[in-house]
Image (cartoon, rainbow, N blue to C red; front, top):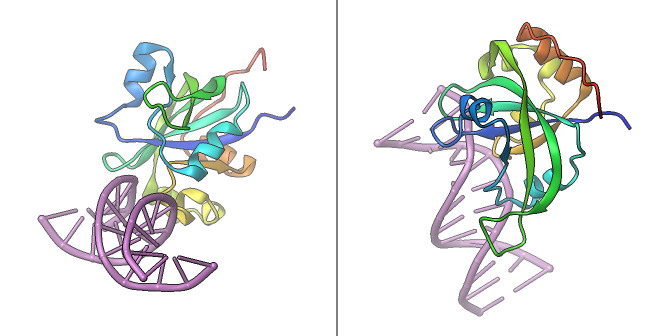
Length: 144
DNA sequence: GCCAACGTTGGC
DNA sequence: GCCAACGTTGGC
C-alpha cells in the first residue's frame, strides 16, 4: 500500500517541532473538528505528515511519521481520536506559507483552500514539491 | 430542517 | 488586535 501524505498544524507555543524531536514521539491530541478527526482516522502506519507551525512561523518545518493509527483521544471522554507520530526528518529550509502561496503548483493545496482545517490530506506531487522547496531529502523508510 | 448567533482558527 | 472564514449550536 502506498504511503499517504498529510499536513497537520500545531501552534509552536503549544507544541513545536523541537519538542517532538526531543520527545521522540507524541500523541497528536486536541483535534476537535469532525473532518480533521476523519482524516486522523484515515491515516495508516508509515504515512508521512508535514508539520506546520501556525500563527507563529507559518511554515512547514519538518516531516513526521505515523507510528500508531487512530485510537481514543485520552484527553476527553467524547468521541475524538489521536494518532501517534514520531519525527522523521527536519526541513533544512522551512517552507513558508508565503512561498507556498507563491508556487502555482501548490495553489490547490487544502492548506490554502481549507485554511481552518488543522489536519488535511496532501497530494503526492505537492508533498514532493514542498520537500524540494525545503531542500529536504527523505530518509529511506525501511519498514512500512 | 433552516438559519441566526456564536465561537474558534489563523492570517495579516 | 482585528477580522474573515467557517464549523457548530440551538431556537423555532
